[in-house]
Length: 619
Image (tube, rainbow, N blue to C red; front, side):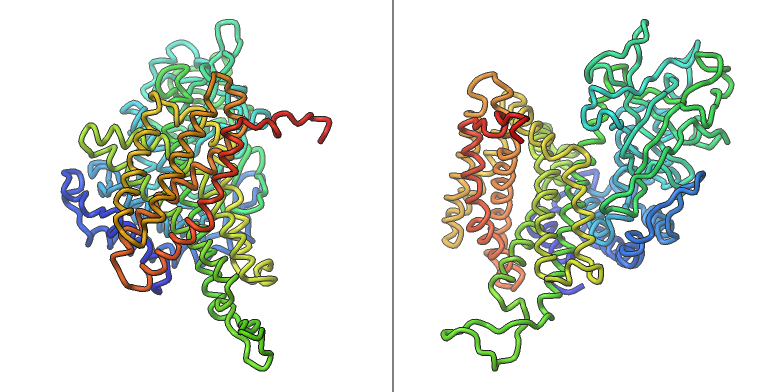
């Protein structure tokens, strides 16, 4: 791959900026070194190129289809899944005893970046690994053995089933019911056994034949003795609902659970992954619990599910997977942006069009020049570079926090936990917005050709447009950030982040080339803190949160400015062209992007009511 490709960027961020080889001094990673990490990255890069990138257009045009019994996907999707599963990446960060490599999570994240850039539409193991990780953290030993281990081995795959057609993101309004499955329901070796009835919408990879089984993690409510559902999120519990029933060792029993595909959703992008509406317990596949007699109503009605954790704790437990998925979505958005950037960069270097401006204007007698020689095309390319490489730094920094939380000293681990809480909404939302903008700029660089299917950039935009929606919409992330994350533990997470931002500014201020940026960053952080305090001047949540999205945009831009300045502190010590490019990207971000936070924070500080006060009828 050329010096302008993805690998040099990942290598720089991992080894020069984050210095991940220092993790090898910790017992968990003591068997590793750069040689191991490079081998993993080499393998991921090769599989992504051969099994994913080569078929990205195929899975976009040959969508999953349902023949009434099966969901059919192209053969290349089966081959990609098998190659990914056999690579060991599903269990890369797991214990050796679980078949894992005990890789640092940040290296696993970097390896998975290649797959997202090659074909996010085919998909890799984000939901499956997240499903297994939740069970390893909150499931019983039997649940881990029967459902998590087979997922990490690639035999099973996993989903998360939250949304419902009538409820969408409002999880407090879900209507899926889970009732105890007769006498002795608590004695099932796989956990308390229930019967579920309801519908779940927007379930990625909810039905396919890529694996022997699909493990659905389903949010549902247990009715009270009068048959009523407890209102609000406090009544939500979490259940394992496998497509096919298994024994205690995770072996298939031959019984199909009552989980039925109701239809496929046909999407703007990300078409290679089946997106489904699922019916639980409608009676298409009625099944009795083996050896335990009929179900509650004597007919075995409903899909069999095994409760994870205690009743009413489902949403809290599910956040383990949701937060992991949100960072995964941010990485997917980042790499789609990066793929578009690299494609438009290559195009701009070869496309001849126009003449350069000289002192007397254009000289039509001169030959046309490559469009990369035009200042406005450089602006669009530099914006993409600033957005995408900055977003990749953000995602890898968050992944590095996961390693600190897992293996650091107690105080450092606790600080990493809290920093990750604060940064997760940004890790999900910022790339979803600004790397989508990068994809739009990639189309613009291509001109009319970018709007055709002859070039890949239109697909990258379509694929990326989903990321502002799924795993918590943009607005939900903003409410989470301003309404909860910056205030949790008396604002300690915000203060910890501020310490790191100001430390970077202090060190950068001593470097002549970076002094101005350090001053701008310090002022930006002060503005964010003041806006936070002004938004919560009283207990009026409606007034505080009315402009949560502009707040999140300003917060995210400030975080990215911090990361770019921290990257620049390393790059400024070098003279190679890649380092020059990083310094120019940092300069672009501070000159063109960071000034945007002023208007965003102004409406937050003043608790502007323009949007909230708009009468419905005036629309």
